[in-house]
Length: 381
Ligand SMILES: [Ca+2]
Ligand SMILES: [Ca+2]
Image (cartoon, rainbow, N blue to C red; front, side, top):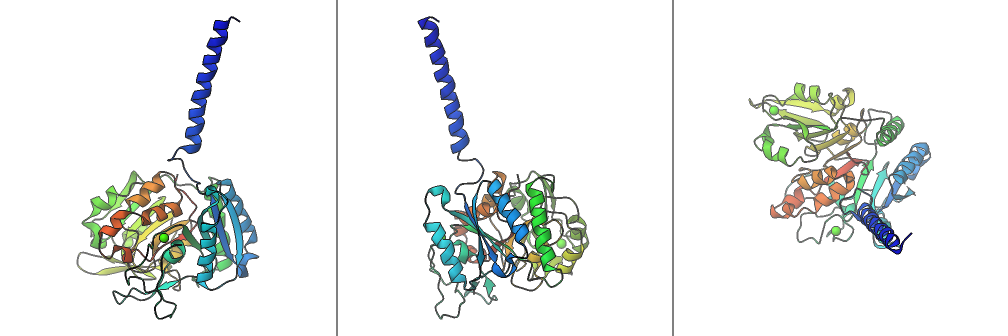
């Protein structure tokens, strides 16, 4: 081979190497690539149920590893929620390298929770999972009654560093709890291995109080393009909702007045119709994910609460909702993150940082009861 040919071959090799390098760099460092980064997840299981559901937990641990995360499963006995927060904080602050920093946690079975009281209004106390996701903020319990005085500003940086999700059927007294655990993890595995599937479609169901802003709700529901929007006041009612949530959708986003166990649908005449937790129990709901913009519905410490009832019914994998009034509002950030392939928990965590929330007086307080019920490590793509 002539010197000229060798030079050409060398140039060719250098170009190929350069192009490959850029390609490899793009694959590994593309900022829009999907999870995981950071990649450490802690799964806490109430020690009293661990042995009963060990096969399910083992499979779940394998599935999380297959997803690319480093994971530790912890049998947890401590009932003081501050101890749980300390444990999470330790793993958030102490890590060998950035990818081993704590990303999020899954709480399985009866696990500790913090209680908050909204001091600005006469709301009842509510469990506040923000306490376990905000690992560097200041929390006030001025009279030491184990109720945080959330809303007694100024507070310090109560933004999310991590996310959590709770998987616990024990608030339900109308199903077999062991079977509920087993069925939940079975369908979780089925979704992860592609045997439980849905077309990428959603139901956006908006009752009367929010229907005049339908286009805004729909325009910011960015994770889906195939959306069935139902928001005509006379059409949003018990019969119609029951009919629709038994149809095939991947995601249901519902706006309806609610309490712990009941949705209230308005008729234009002023008459209310109710959908109960027992309807969710007895109907063949089909969706995998829900966003319940439904006050109190995800107060997961209340007996037979709607959120927990949805989670352990039929096909459900996860919900976002609120344990108090309010819900996941100003949510475009949340759905944008899901659309990009981020896991549910990270989408929730990023949404919490949406600066738009701070532009509305009282909105931080209103969203302070939001939480994830179900596996926060799932994606919709
Ligand atoms: Ca924080
Ligand atoms: Ca209606």
